[in-house]
Image 1 (tube, rainbow, N blue to C red):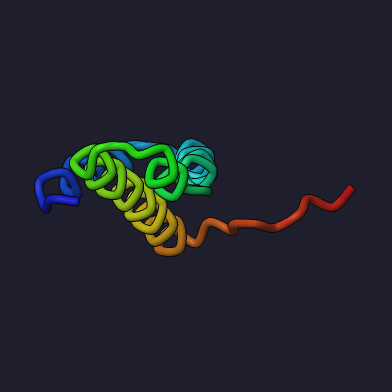
Image 2 (image 1 turned 30 degrees about the horizontal axis):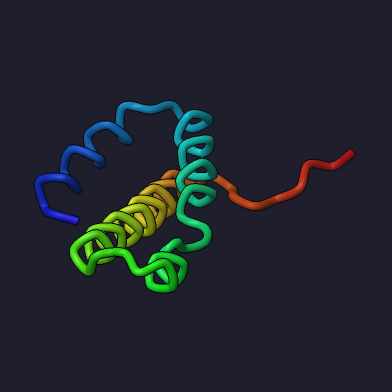
Length: 84
């Protein structure tokens, strides 16, 4: 992820409430799960398409990491089960 993209992400994330940030974090983690790259190799995709996908998946993972770090800085508890 480019530094300018990170700065835009940070600015946006800092404007979110704690609950919104937590929701965005969970959403970004979900989006970053799994990879389509192996399947693309199997199906014979062009190497440029695979490289583009690798970059996209890397950015998704970085986004989740950045949002998770912001949650920690705000002392937002993640992955805790609600008492029922």
